[in-house]
Length: 131
Image (cartoon, rainbow, N blue to C red):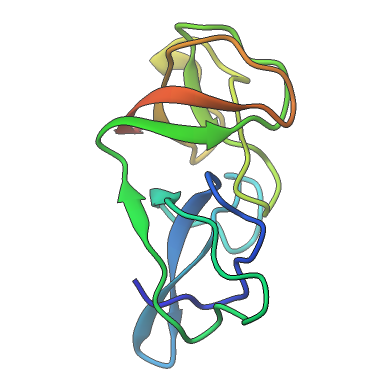
C-alpha cells in the first residue's frame, strides 16, 4: 500500500488509511481520542530500507487477519482484547479486557496470544473488533 508518511523504524506497528487529496495512504494508527483516528487496517509487515523515506512509496501491510506481530505500548496480558493506544504512534494496549468496555469510539485490533511489556513485539490473533 502507498505510504502517507515516513514509516522507517515502524515495523509491527498498526496502520490506518488516511485520505491524501483523494488517495488513500497508510499512516500510523491513532487511538480513539486522537483527532485523526480512523479504523485500523493492518500492521507494517517488513522493515523499510533505512536510507530512503517511505512517504509516497509502497510498503508491505499485513492485514488484520490471522496471527500477526504487533508492538506493545504498555504491559499486556495474554488473552486480552487489544486496541490502538491513545497516541498516534501505532502501538497497542489492553486498556479494556472485554468487548463491552471499549473506550469512546474505540475499535479492537485483536487478542493477545502472549503477554508483553512496553516495546515488545508479540503475537496477536488479529481481527477487527468494532464497537
